[in-house]
Length: 202
Ligand code: PCA
Image (cartoon, rainbow, N blue to C red; front, side, top):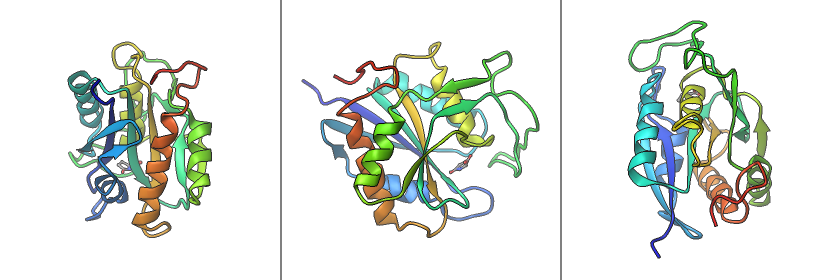
């Protein structure tokens, strides 16, 4: 039996910064976690393109789950997003110079899409590893939210469970803590998956 593939993505630096905490943490994660082979990809911080890239990787790798990771300013904990909103509202330009205002991610798309990873179990697992974590009801309206929205509606709300974790930008948590927290969150997926009481990963 081949080992199940878990797709984990991060983002390149953006907004004039030369670092992205999500990239540093994801690239330092182990290549195997529990039963999973972890495949990592770093995404462009570009509206539409990042989500399209994840969808391509889903088609190419057939992962059992997708965990996207980005950084967020002003937070002290790993935030596990519960949903994505159909809104693009950029305070700063993305890395292609786009700053959409009040535009939908998908014209005519549903207002919200729920993440399909077990958010509560993941929060508990990260906290059990001694790293602060919290569920979050908003992934913002920039490229991270955009990516989650596009992945969740891929193949018409695909069978692949997907979710998003925001790690603090800057030094609120060390890279070692981020790696430990992300690894714990992913290990929790092997125990129980899906937020509809279904087990997707068995
Ligand atoms: N954070 C941004 C985009 C890339 C990243 O790491 C966001 O929260 O949308």
